[in-house]
Length: 267
Image (cartoon, rainbow, N blue to C red; front, side, top):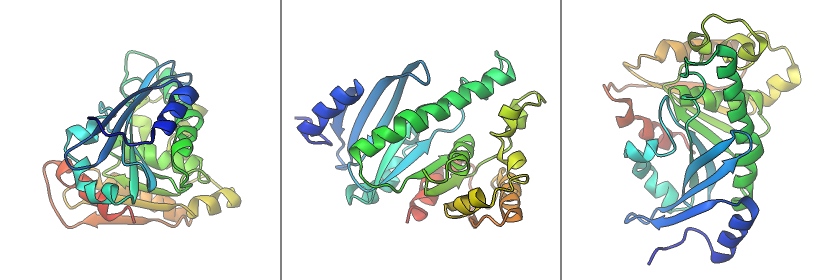
């Protein structure tokens, strides 16, 4: 018998409310796992996600380049967070890929790449957040991700600081110009934090951003360490409170450390 992560009443509500497909499962570790999918108006296609747990602080997990909603599962990273999930401290929302159709898609023009990423942001704000609030009453939202996923996690909080309360950016790079073929445009500028943060002079917005618990993480031989330090310096330039931690460990595979880095910074 398959054990549901939600009550039967809530399942019926979700189907009626969102028109989503649902697969319920409970792994041997007792972590409650639910697959969900719906046809996204923002993206114009089916968008998948995995949910681990049924209560606790929601954590939106952005995939890295070419990763998808199963990335953290495939990398055997979710089980590192098992205790926090099983004990009801956190609920993970592993969301679908964005980079393959935007930044990494060099078959389309740069402005179409950035527009596709903006549609992904609309999916987050107009679809994912309301969905999360329907099944989890906790208003405190954490974003996280590795590499370009860390960029997305930070950007969403910088642009929407009242919607996201904490960021755990792991081994991130934050300058998207490398994917924009030297094209200059406002839509690129306002999605590139290393450009718009130094020129941000709205005191009210800066104060709101400073209220977000921002944590940027690297390990000792992390190739993105300098990139993260640059982002940190720019945040300090605008007096935006945050933390930049460099773990005193080395690895040739960031996935051996990434889930532990997240685990240590969820509280």
